[in-house]
Length: 186
Image 1 (cartoon, helix red, strand yellow):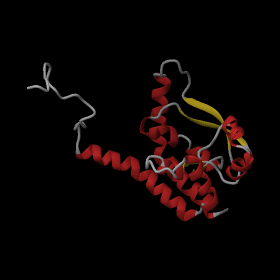
Image 2 (tube, helix red, strand yellow; image 1 turned 180 degrees about the vertical axis):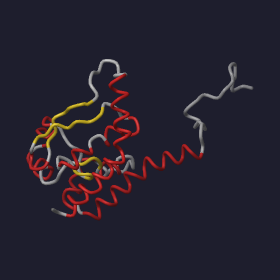
Image 3 (cartoon, one colour; image 1 turned 90 degrees about the horizontal axis):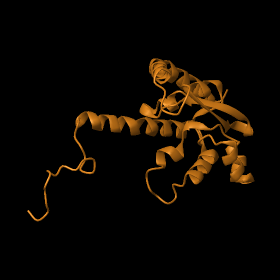
Image 4 (cartoon, one colour; image 1 turned 90 degrees about the vertical axis):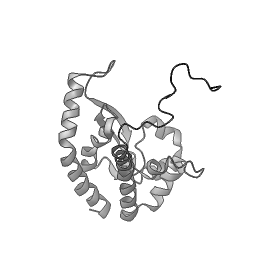
């Protein structure tokens, strides 16, 4: 067992244990009040993993509080996914890649989060997801994984702390605060 796989099993199992009550509650809410036009609690999709092997990715049908990602933790423990790696692609997306990108993608497990996910919002031209995924596949290791995991946890935590510091405070773009009948000429 490699250091990366050990990290996946130990940290993935710990996170799954911590997230289990929230996941169970979310599954119950989804079962009692399914979103309009959708049935079932889980979304099932075929994805391509390590060595080009396909697997059925199951996740909760919700984006709230990133519970859909946390619901994928059993795939990490089982070995279909890693905590860190390129995004898992569908067979159609993999077929469109071509032979060279498909080869390096098949050399690493897809992940819950990855370099492309933590750098996606920087706006830099070299931060194309495909280039970042290729860079990760070429240079992956436990140190880089820990940095990516820290950044992945930091982003939602920073947003939550910001919300606690300024509860209910709207940003100017959120709401039009002008009184009815207001005019610039006044």
